[in-house]
Image 1 (cartoon, rainbow, N blue to C red):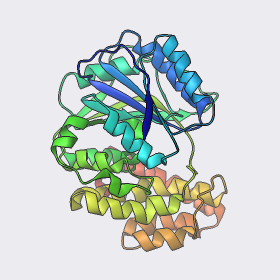
Image 2 (cartoon, rainbow, N blue to C red):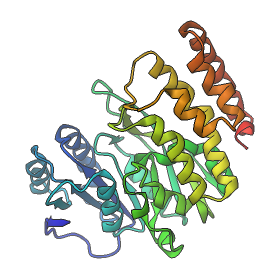
Image 3 (cartoon, rainbow, N blue to C red):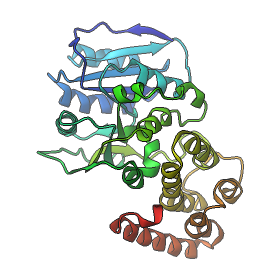
Image 4 (cartoon, helix red, strand yellow):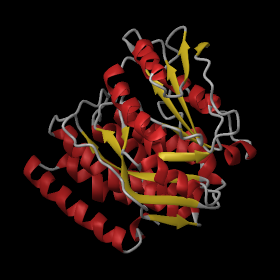
Length: 339
């Protein structure tokens, strides 16, 4: 439930873009993000900024108030209690008043100059989805600044867009959605995905299902903080659960591409990290037990993913290198293996 909104003198005309940040107890990262946004949003009336605080018990409210006092226009909402990450994501989407909505992770950042570059793209045409490329972010990462025009590819085929993005459709911080077009398509209720940790696919898949035009921004504008464990069961979420949601909410041809990309491009690296104990999946079963049940009917699982699980570590490392080479060749050829 929304219990508090800062009353700010903001432009009442419809914003072009809403940046909506769901947050909970990550004030250090939130402060870093708001610092980068404050530099870019000064005097920028085309952007609405929302922070949806899921009842944080740290200094989040005082930090937001500090930025407001410094002149950053923020619509700040604070829940009476923690409603869960999924519900907070939905709240961000529903609160957004912009034509485009960008639900953005509180621990990621936007490179300096990126917002102006993105706005210039969004003003030109109606896009269903704008995908923004990312770079790995650590506490030691230098700040990136974008100067001048950015490289971007306009895409008119939903299958081509899905081949380029696939698993990254699940990543909120790199996908900007046209809310106006999504709502006119009468999507299935987003609330049906509560508890899945993939609630964002409700609006993302709705946009992809009725796709007419998309933009793939090649410049790496988003700093994505590595957090592979994510506090949830990664095997189950990006295995059987992702498969179920994808097959239910996308046309068959698009679902096929997204799942192929997940198996071929996402799971080999993640499984190698898991088998080397670099991440904790918090999962109930073993990788093959969980993923095999979901993907054993797809040859890509046996070629790209299963050997990483089954082979001794040195051979698994060699297999992963070979997989990455194959994926690079496949990308150069137009993602033939994902079709």
